[in-house]
Amino acid sequence: MTVLEQPGSYRPTPPPAWQPRTDPAPLLPDAEPYRLLGTEAADRLDPELLKRLYGHLVRGRRYNTQATALTRQGRLAVYPSSTGQEACEVAAALALEERDWLFPSYRDTLAAVARGLDPVEALTLLRGDWHTGYDPHEHRIAPLCTPLATQLPHAVGLAHAARLKGDDVVALAMVGDGGTSEGDFHEALNFAAVWRAPVVFLVQNNGFAISVPLAKQTAAPSLAHKAVGYGMPGRLVDGNDAPAVHEVLSEAVRRARAGGGPTLVEAVTYRVDAHTNADDATRYRSDAEVEAWRAHDPIALMEREMTRRSLLDDSVVQAERDAAERMAADLRERMHQDPVLDPMELFAHVYAEQTAQLREQQAQLRAELNAAGEFPDAHGGGPQEGRQR
Image 1 (cartoon, rainbow, N blue to C red):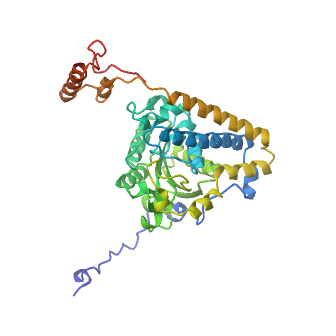
Image 2 (image 1 turned 135 degrees about the vertical axis):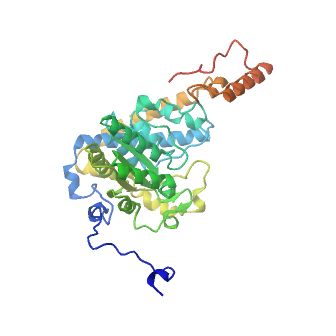
Image 3 (image 1 turned 90 degrees about the vertical axis):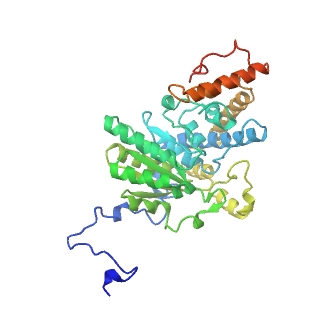
């Protein structure tokens, strides 16, 4: 029996001149997550960058606690908190230029706010109001994505199209560790590498895909190691070290903009709060585990470094906390105002030109509301009426 005839034994032999298309060594991530805070390299960090990152972290933490409180008050239907992950959120927003695009997941409302989006608009979708809550083109922020990883192929498509048009644009796509098990993740990375698209993938590895720990999801040495299989570099970084995440992402953005192609960055962090307000995290993790990660809190790490360099004192801390409270108070006040809703907006902006079925559904709803005395004919108009964003 020949080798070819033996089931399961065939191994293709490459020709003598065969060489790998790319040397895999430079694509592999470091063995340990890259860190700056608490190392000698931290001395070279720009003081203004540290102050900017710190201010965003403090406001981001307050934003998370306020949004979580709004769910308990019935003002939000759901809120996926990013408490503990603020360094990833802030660094992603600040690493981009104004012309670039951010593609967030459902947990990344803070990244959108750090990029300049009104906090109320960032939460509009989570209160069940309006289609997206903001104009993606105005802010260069794609719609918040609830289905896992579906935003990744969109980011690749936009980045590839921008390059074809000659636009100097980079897309940064955010996804959780659970999203790396989705087919969209594979397809996005494969296309991005083949096309050398100017896109950066940021995986926030916070330990759990809802209740599933990473060890039960992948056997890879790290999620960053997945990059080499697609032909792009992988970077592993401490996701609670804000300057380190900012530096790694900034380098990846510059590389993408210069035509170097995509990069996969894994930021190792931790979701301190539950998956959402509807989740009971005590069923799958211990309090001791959570407390151990609280000792590696991104705000505390920044305060320690800035204090060491005489960049932080009680007055600066108080000033940032006061700014965060003003932001939270404004968010709270506006979120407690009942929005004026027009039921006909359900049919606006669904298609560029309404379908016959959509017109039929609109007429049916209008008739039902009129019959109930809830929507007089004088109130509504054509299918494209409603708020313009």
